[in-house]
Amino acid sequence: MTSVVLFDLDDTIFAHRLAVDRGIASHLAASGVTTVDAAEIARWTELEEHHYHRYLTGELDYLGQRRARARDFAAPYGLRFTHDSEAEGWFEEYLDHYRAAWSLYDDTLPCLDALAGRGVRLGIITNGEEHFQLPKLERMGLADRFEHVIASGALGITKPDRRIFESACEEFGVVVSDALYVGDRLATDAVGARDAGLRGVWLVRDGAASVGEIAAAEASGVMVITSLAQLPALV
Ligand SMILES: [Mg+2]
Image 1 (spheres, rainbow, N blue to C red):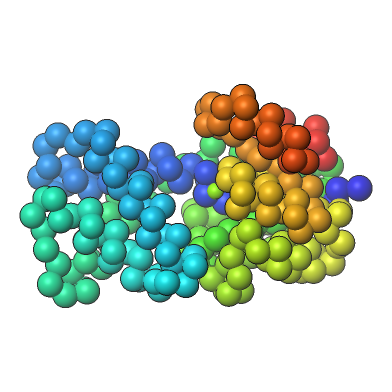
Image 2: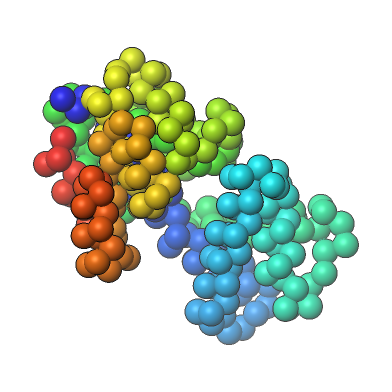
């Protein structure tokens, strides 16, 4: 019986990517860049993927990945940050624009309501720092909906390491087979959870994966949904 449903935060219940895209466009516009093309927004996303991964593997610390993203992105604009504080300041300005663009997906609250209404206990496992992730829940009015929020930064273990999933189930006092985990990344979220013994669900929004990729995931024992509206039926 699935008594606990655990969620990934960014791009599962919280529209992170949308806020990133809007945030960098708005930051550039405020810096006087008159035309912001899609390629530049994509480059910002690629730099996030690259340097945030280096943080998750321990190669960079949290501020280090911010500085690296700022330096790499700003270089083609002729911006050179001599001191670390300048790169961090540039990133902080970006964050103001990012935060201004925060939102939930339309299917988030109905899904949480449906699960809570059936007595399902809810939690979060996120790869990030508590001080950066918790305010998202607070400002979106979600903080009281989750019994436990597990941030990798506080634990020193990142998804897809099975221990972060096991640790979350321990906090809930349930065995792993009683828990389901849903996230937008196949390997990090759904496969990681499945390998730890939970039910692993891959959320594929907006055609983000091919039919072949979805079929392969399902064949490997991962459940696939295209909207959180489909989640309550799996529980
Ligand atoms: Mg995610």
